[in-house]
Amino acid sequence: RCDVSAVGVWNPLERAFFDVRVFHAPAPSNRRHTTIARMYNQHETLKKTAYNARVLQVEKAVFTPLVFSTTGGVGGVAERFYKRIAEKTALKTGQKYHETIGYIRKRLRFDLLKTTIIALRGNRGRPTATPNIRGMDLNLIPEG
Image (tube, rainbow, N blue to C red; front, side, top):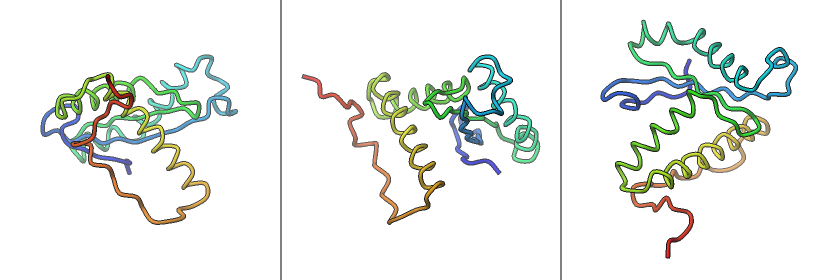
């Protein structure tokens, strides 16, 4: 099963499935790769091998593997995803692109960190409300 699905990310009215993988570069399983770029490519390829055929044939949708490293790095496909989401959000909210992509990068990194912590120690407390970004100014530094 894929982690997330959304409509209209890559093309209008097209459904897209996303699966997230976070890897630790110094792990023994990654030693055979000589560069970090090869590690990202290998993990993206493994995800595509596992899910792409089923998503295309059964779901009639597009599959996108989102690969991140524990050091904060982002794979090539995930970077294109960031840029696409930031472009659409900036256009819709009227915010500047660089402010929007900065906000999205920070938000997704903290959400991945939160998910990892919950996976390690369990959920302790009530869920928090999702912020309404339509009325939110994404510029974290006040202009003036």
